[in-house]
Image 1 (cartoon, helix red, strand yellow):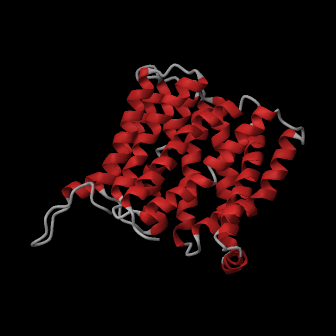
Image 2 (image 1 turned 180 degrees about the vertical axis):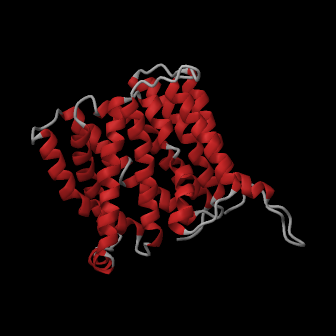
Image 3 (image 1 turned 30 degrees about the vertical axis):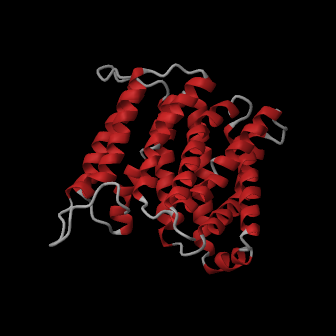
Length: 311
C-alpha cells in the first residue's frame, strides 16, 4: 500500500470514532437482549462483514490454507475471541454502568505487558511496573467511586468480569503473536471456529426466541463496528502511515469520546471518580508507551527522537 500520512490519519480517526461508540451500543443493546444473545447476533453480522471483505480482497483461498497450517491456534484464538472475551465483556456491561465498565477494559494493554514476561520471555521493564501501579490505581478509584477509605463496589461480579475480560483479551493477543497469516483472514477464521460454541451457549442460556428489532439493530452495529469493519480500517491506517506514532496515539482519545457518547445517548451522569480513574488509566498507558521513548539515549551522532516520530 502506498504511504500517505493524511489518508492514514483519516482511517485512524474513523476507527477511533467507531470504537468510541461501541460502549454505548453495548449498553443500549443489552436493554433488549441478554449477553449471550448479543454475542450470537453480533458474531453473525461480523462474520458476514469480514467474509465480504475477504471476498473483495480475493483472499478466500487463504481460509483453507491458514486453517490447515495451524488448526489448534485458531481453535485457541476463537475460544478466546470472540467466544469467551465478548461473553464475559457483555456480562460486565450488563452488571455495571457503562461509564465504569468502559475504562476498565483499557487496562488490558498493561496486563498484556505483564503476561508477556512469563509467556513470551520478554523482560519486565520498570516502565511496565510504574504503568501498572498508575493504571490499577485508576481501577480502584472507579470501582470505589472515589471513596477509597470505604472499599465498597457496586457489583463485585461486574468488576470481576471486567478484569477477567482484560485477561482473556491479553491471552488472545499473546496466542496471535506467532500468527503469520493474513490478519483479516485470521480474524474471520477465529469467528467461524467460535460460532458453533456461541450458538450452543446462546441456545442453552436463552433458547431460540427472536429478540426485539432494537436489539438486533444494536447487535448489527456491534458486529460491524466493534468486531468487523473497524479492525480493517485500523489495519489500513497503520499500513498507509508514514509515521505510526501519531496514529497509535489517537487511541488515547477514544475513552474520553466514549464517555461523551455514554452521557449523551445512555443518559448516565458521569461521576467525578470516573474522570479521575480514567485519567489515571490513560496516564498509565501513556507511561508504558511513551516513557521509554522520552528517556532513550541517542546513539553517537543521533538526535533524540520526537515522541511524534514513527515507532
